[in-house]
Amino acid sequence: MSLSPNILGALCALVAVASPLAVAAPTDVPQPGVLGGPPGGGAVPGEADLVQMLKVVDDRQANTGDYRSIAYLEQKEKGKADTAFEVVFYRRDADDKLMILFTKPKTEAGKGYLRVDKNLFLYDPTVGKWERRTERERIGGTNSNRQDFDESRLAVEYTPKFVAMEKLGKHDVTHMTLSMKEGVDVAFPTVELYIDKDGNILKREDKALSGKLLRTTYYPKWNRIYSESKKGDVYIPGEIRIFDEVEKGNSTLIQIRETDLRPLDANLFTKAWLESKSR
Image (cartoon, rainbow, N blue to C red; front, side, top):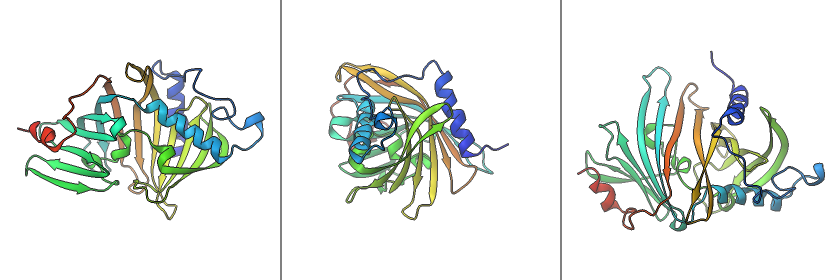
């Protein structure tokens, strides 16, 4: 039996409440009237309030130093056997660095993505070649793309507009529409975002310029880890569930199973380093 996105959203939101790994925001981050809903319980938040909310979301997920995570990806496609991958992704948020390295299965090991400046490149060790990819690139053929592994830059890339205060499961959420800023390269020009009062994204709907819904993403679990470089907590989605709204029945599960915020090799974010992993 298939569930509608609304029902799935409610279920995912309930998981976040029930899970011992789900976290609440530190009391010193949210500001009354910004993350807690319309000021005074009635006024509609203005653009400045929404931008501040996005900045809090971005800051919670950012680390001033380096970032390494191991993730399990499971892809379901209608009429096909399920596929699974293990990847390690590395970030250096201060310099906008990102690398995604496939480690399992053996047939995919050594394949990887590297962002150089604003360009995303794919390396295929079977042919020893690099190819430039777009922001819409499906990582490993899954429904995921670069933004699912990268740092959050919502306040930099989008302009928000308030829609409504709504319920998602038992959660009170702020629903806003994000429109891509001019000159910014993103996978999806329009986004419907649902953020709880603590600053956690619970649901995201990615759309084309035409308004067509392309995919829906749920974040049922958020974890946090203390960063020595940041001198504070970094918030990490423990699980991401992505549903393809064009090819119904296709979906991707991402489980982030291990995160390390210690410094990485200075030369890691290079083509030479990635090529060396397949030798």
